[in-house]
Length: 143
Image (cartoon, rainbow, N blue to C red; front, side, top):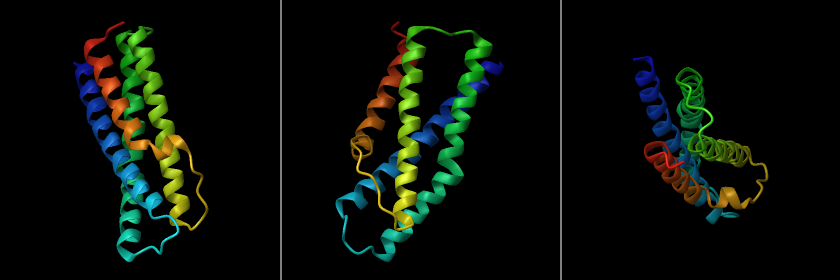
């Protein structure tokens, strides 16, 4: 029974985390396309809202996802299957991307220069591809 609750918590946290990351990626994409232009009040408000959502929902959801996942691995004994190792690598890449997006949005909000990285520039594609891979690995468990 505990495993089912942890799994539900893990999935809910994943949905919240990925939704928040996609919001950050879309806002970042809009800002990077308009680099050098004056920032409007609406853009500033959107940036502040997404950053607040990240602090209050997206980042805690990522932490909850990791904790629930690790507890399930330890308690259920599904380690080290190849599908799970690959899934963990994908989640690790998405976690790193989350940190990069958070940092870039924070620097942008503070008027500091931001680094142009290919991973961040293509964040939406990386996130969607990662979610597809995770879904396939978690449901089909091909390895």
